[in-house]
Length: 297
Image (cartoon, rainbow, N blue to C red; front, side):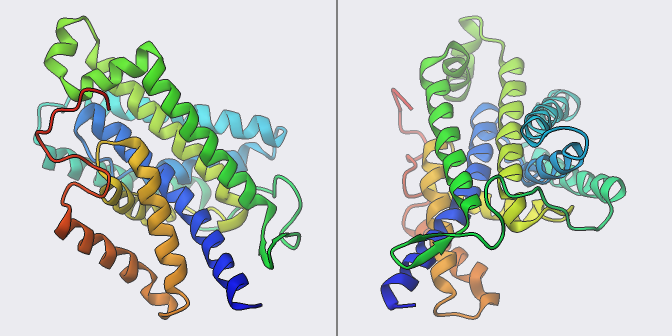
């Protein structure tokens, strides 16, 4: 493989990883925008989506299993908000973050008891593990096309929802000015529940898409949450669209670091860039300084 083809291969690999990180980062941003909470259980939604879809696929067609898994995980996200976050919303942000970390551990343990330690995966949506698509000398799995397509569709739908629907505008209003939102009759608790449900659904879709490539196991959520958090911070916390840029950047840095550093240093490269950026722009590459008035997010 020539130098150009190898570089393209790294780029495609980075975009694939970055797309997944971007979806997790969008989930972070959605919940943060609506509640001010950083939900470190976000990666568990990805894990649950894949695990539930694998289980359901034994009893029903794959597309139906995926849809059911996404709906179930969205309901779990809403239930977590109602049971844990709504009664505790007056606690400090630090307490809420600790609660999300605790929930992540609890969900992992429940998943371990339900599905055990075995690694599972959904079948490839098209083709198989040995089929590949060749682009200028670089090869990618057909499942990668599904992953990237799902990311594009989710980002487009989310952008349309937040900008053009009444519920999306209400959610943005809760983020930018909660007091004004209450005065115009917006039910903030319901908007927060909706944010949790949407972020859980996004995570579940990502979990189903990547399952044939990365496999699915009960411990996969925490590493994805860390990378998604890094992507959200790098792009600019509070801006769902900036999360896409941050996720892709983290994925590409991680992929190209393989050519220069041992595989064990993949995470080091990505987080070194993150720290360097935050020293220069603490609000992220595409974020806005705290206190800056934003007329249209």
